[in-house]
Amino acid sequence: MKTFDLTTTSLRDINQALHEQSSECTEREWKITGAKGNHNIACGLDQSLSVDIEGHAGYYCAGMNKKAHVVVHGNAGQGVAENMMSGTVRVKGQASQSAGATAHGGLLVIEGDAGARCGISMKGVEIVVGGNVGHMSCFMGQAGALVVCGDAGDALGDSLYETQIFVKGSVSSLGADCIEKEMRQEHLEYLTDLLNRAGVDEDPKDFKRYGSARQLYNFKVDNASAY
Amino acid sequence: MCGIVGLYLKNPALESELGALFEPMLIAMTDRGPDSAGFAIYGDEVVDGTKLTLRHEDENYNWEALAELARAELNAEVVWFQNATVAVFKMHCDAPRATAFIEAHASDVLILSAGHSIEILKEVGLPEIIANNFNLKGMKGTHIIGHTRMATESAVTMAGSHPFSTGEDLCLVHNGSLSNHNRLRLELKRQGIHFETDNDSEVAAGYLMHRLQEGDTLKQALENALKDLDGFFTFTIGTRDGFAVVRDPIACKPAVLAETDDYVAMASEYQALTTLPGIENARVWEPEAAKIYVWERT
Image (cartoon, rainbow over all chains, first blue to last red; front, side):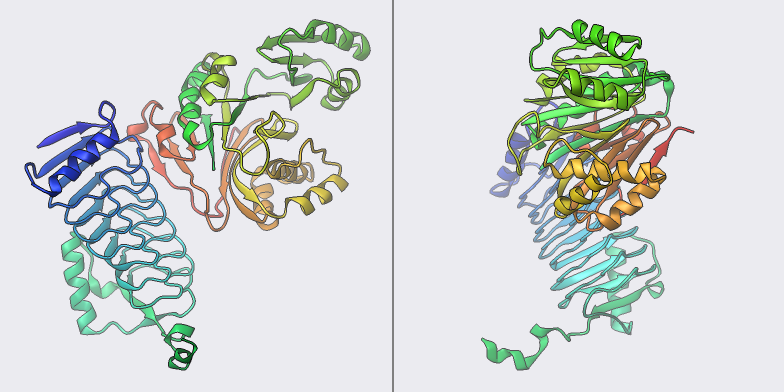
């Protein structure tokens, strides 16, 4: 294992060392200590690395991640795993707003609460939150799934496309065009598998499923003539 | 962008270290606001009388002459000390008389704050230089809030430097911008609130002062602020005995809170909290949108 201390090594040098693994992998396991709220830790990784970050991370931690398995042993600031393509990101504490924003793939697990706009404009990522999510979560979510083991804030799933949402607790309010949907066997099976992969011990039968009613402008074939 | 920070002590044993604990918090927010910086510190109470923080451009300004005149005009005891460009006057009279005297007899002196406990110190420049100039790390007190400014809406001048105080012992630091401040300023002026600048943050401070004067508690005043202020904001507020944090209903601007048995700390970013004692085991969380967090001495 290779260890870097952010209090003595520059962030740029650490990220550069991680990026150099993309052409030829010489070291699988990495540890970054002294995070101290620094922004952009372990961004843009493109290799099957295991990266452990000790302490609280700042903004955009593990952003644009591809293939790597990143664990934050603390809280994460805004935009953790934003635009992730693949791999996994796990936050042991809480995450600030816009967690997993626009992410195309991979698995994001937040063991505590996530702030506002969790999974905003998500495009295929799977997000599992152990606690609550804030308002406007999954706004314009296009694909993938958001699982909330606690409660969801206002305007959940506003202007949703095809993202699936599963919530165990209460939902303050649903956003425009987001509705509760029937939980069929196929959804239970999918949720069981996702919770297992996330390592979260919850009963899938306790969750409700939400999705798009497909009633907004872009879902109407009549509007196709405008283009 | 701007940076805001606050530290409210629960453990009186730390009061002698307030400035030393706070200085690195303010400096950590330099990236968010390198243009000017300032802070409002609470402590060294003047129970029977008024404490004014006054500023004059000239470090060699004759403060003793002003104090002597005040003693004669107000027939009141006046003691004072100087800290760089600022002087703190402790005057044995009420705040309206004290401020009226300064306005009448020293029009080139800027009143930064008035009250029993508050002292506001601010300057244009990097937070580190300002902290050094005022010897922040040597200061004692019960709570402190600070601001580092990245100017967007008005020039980098002393007039645009934060924080603002619009009433006795009240101070507010603001990250964000308000959209209905012009109309609100007009209404508040009619209610007798005095403003020094065209700044939106000053209107927020004036609004809170007005609500408190109407009899609101700090929490009630902030509940009303959520209804009446339009725009985006994270506020941290200091009063003589209290400390509060509130974010707008959309939570546009960042904020993080940390609490231990010894203190409550607020910052725009977690980086500003990393030097606090016991932060590794503190409860650290993001304040929710439109939720009012208040700590007050009972």
